[in-house]
Image 1: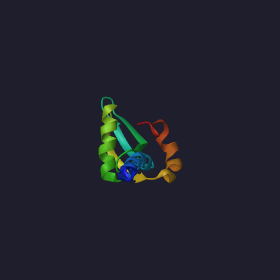
Image 2: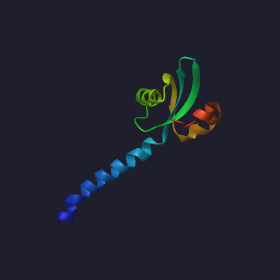
Image 3: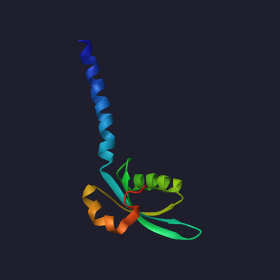
Image 4: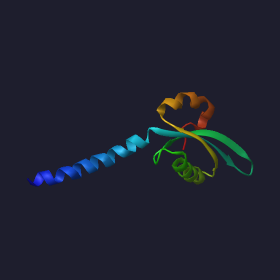
Amino acid sequence: MRHLTRLPLLFVLLAGLSAPVQAAECYADYKAKQDQPLKLHYGVIALSGGCSKSAARQEIATRLNRAGWTLLNVQSVFGPEGLDKRKADAGSYFLRF
């Protein structure tokens, strides 16, 4: 009988482990800049947080700031089906951050 009380805990743990996998299926494309000298880039990034533009803005800005970039705009948020058509445009900034 004691093992039955552990069953809900097991489901909670498994659900928590599957959440990052689901989040990895969300991507965003964005534009960013650096100053002195001015540099601009367009990139595609895998999101680990929420799959909305507002959640993406915060996550992308934080990750870009660590590398010295400033987020200008989140273009869109999409699933894995949108990766191929954006890969060439993003170049070296495709899934870089």
